[in-house]
Amino acid sequence: MEKVLEVALERLKEVDYGEVRFVRIKRQSINLENGIISSIDEDVEEGIGIRAVYKGCVGFASTSSTFIDDIVKTAERAIEFAKASYRFSGKEYPFLFEGQHIGEYITQIEKDPFAVPLEEKIDLLVRTDEILSKNKFAVSRRAFLNFFKTEKYFLNTEGSRIKQTIYESGGGYVIWVLVDGNLQSRSYPAPHGGNHLQGGYEIVEEMDFVGNAERISEEAVMFAKTGRINEMETTLVVGTHQMALQIHESVGHPLELDRVIGYEASYAGTSFATIDQLGKLKYGSSLMNIVADAKTPRGLGTFGWDDEGVPAQRIELITGGILTGYLSSRDSAWAIGLKRAGGTARASSYNRMPMVRMTNINLLPDKGSLEDLISEVKDGIFVDYNKSWSIDQRRLNFQFSTEVAYRIRNGKIAEPLRNVVYFGITPEFWNSLVAVGGEEEWKLWGLLNCGKGEPGQTMHTGHGSSPAVFVKVKVGSV
Image (cartoon, rainbow, N blue to C red; front, side, top):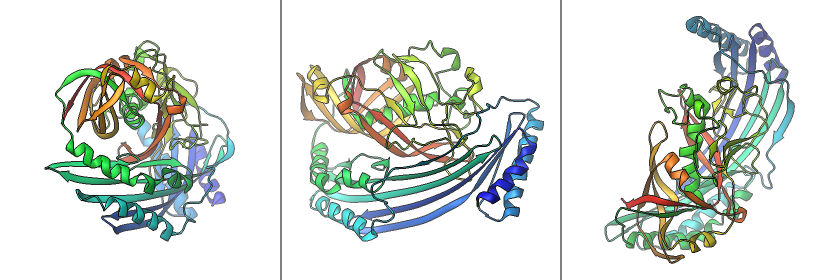
């Protein structure tokens, strides 16, 4: 295969820059619904994506064929598209030089998830479901596991030759209960697909599905039975999963540089954090320190090099509450005067072009345990585990609801609350940040469903955070 790719690359030398990217993705997904296996999906997807750059204008083409003639023709189409783009625009665009990189990145795993017998995985889901099924209020149950192995071979006209093998594992379960006409869900380890991290089957074993099932089942009934709250303004203590969604929607997306300069305006939207505010915008309080770290251990946004051949980096996005950086690619970094791209261009498969995507967007810890944070709150609310989200096209106005919520009274967790939702405007909300928990409370979450682009791409991203405290937040119930 490598020799075939080299032939295609040779064809790309007539343009300013060219790259060939071979991708093979192996997937396995197991779903159990109400005690019955509803699906076992296994597939392998592979092909070659080729990108050509002519006077800064990009052309992309892909093929699932491994015949050399087809691959060369694909390279020729990419060149044709790049030149046509230049003719249409009549303008030359910057495309940053990176230089040669040769190396290999492999996820360190303890147990190959594809070597673990299918029967063992099914047994785990069945044993978990047996516990959930004992809940007399249960109306539906679902448990699932997902595994991915992604192999990439990247080469470009700058001389780079890069191999990467990435394993991702995870899953979860959810129970829905109906109590006195109130339908309530409770998920483990979290809603929206559970949790997934880079690693082998050990990721699933560490989650302890069975050991947490009874607690989750009981909490579903408890939250269904409890009451709502009236709309008010209060102190909000936010757990790590909800913080992950908050970071994703109100920091990660608005700091994607292609959105900021208008490349994504027709689909994903734009951003309030415009480039004229770089180094000036008071995005949040001094406790707000957020980085994009493509080297975070186990993160779904972790790799050796991005899909443009740029090495993994740690980028300071928000420093002491001030906007200090963006997520960038080789065809967007010029907009903020960078001499080198941020290494955040990724593609969901061989048949998609690399674009700016989140890596691991992490809020750095400060100090104190969750108990310490709560002890400082006389009257407030604790929320965690995102249930739903909504945010506008510029990433300003938002509202989130959560599966878990409790009233805080005199520094202690008090009664549970049902269907709590909170509202905010991004910079106002982050400027109300008054405390961030310590490193011992910091937790990494992985999302499989970040959508962007036309044609659409679904990307895996990571987010790490400690619990955090915000004041004067509007809350209510739905």
